[in-house]
Image (cartoon, rainbow, N blue to C red; front, side):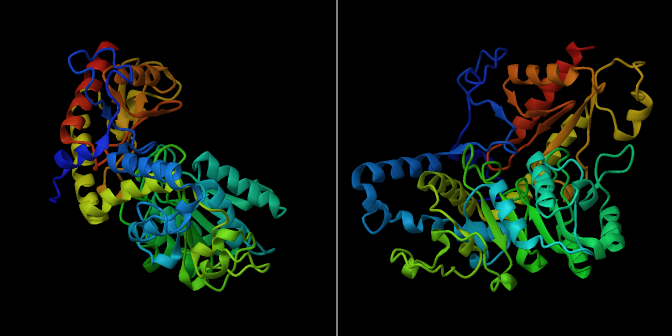
Length: 447
């Protein structure tokens, strides 16, 4: 399969129709696929996932409990169904198989990892993260600080972009690690910032954290399946992720975690029977004997339906050639969407926002937009975050609704951002062209 695979691969996915998403301004192709640019929020359904889930339902109906073992009609006995996903997940995050577990949900796994690795002392107790991390991460950091008797305002260092900027400068992150490192217990950033779409320099941050004696973990919710990762070689201590965004596992899909093999001697304090070694698991021994590596942190048997849904999508990744091929096309498609957007007369360069839309002033009521995602392809994934102007005017909400009426499905983040994710597995250059044209048409009606 060649790198220019959208025409072939889009047929592997089922996209919502214009009619189903309420695209009232699309009449000539009402039952055709919408322009689905929301893969950073919920990935599209792959036909293989649909097929595998149907197979698991059939197995449940026909063999019942015997489907756990050798009687499974498709050879995916449920006691080991996660083993089908593990090597593919390991490849996606750049890890060894024993360093990866397909389990739980992102926030549950985050707490599990913080309970394991966040061991504050009187001198080293701080958590370093980006400001305005995804709320679930913020809540987890604060609750973990409270759990250990610290005031989150003192224990959590939140880094913000410089005034008038939207992305964190990598050197500013590294400078804080160098300056505060002796007091930092845990460095924990998002691989890709959900709001701005910024891809953090994960290797250099990890290296800097390790040089200062900090534990370094990553939330890969927006990075896995989006950009190449090399967690083992980077020496990251742990990572967690969900799979329902770029991995297309379905709403609330099963999560995953990674633990570097150097921590194999560290045992979970929250043991569950699914983390017990397989050879004696069903003998129900009274003493826990953990599987070596990340899978020893499993607690309960995973949902066979959720795991099958993930597996179907991962098979598509494998057939395409995994991340090197996907990333190559992602850069091209996202770059094309950016090119089309900046051609609009309503596009405002970041450097001109202050002069054209002064803070607190309503001197310019002309609608416009800028892109707050970094323009360097190496500093972003498959997402462009559009700041709709004037800020706080309610224009964003109108633009978002109008885009949906043309069958362009992105997502909005209050108060003023619309995120568009041209996902390389199923979005085309034509999708990008049409989305940019509709946005221009909508902005024109607002003048």
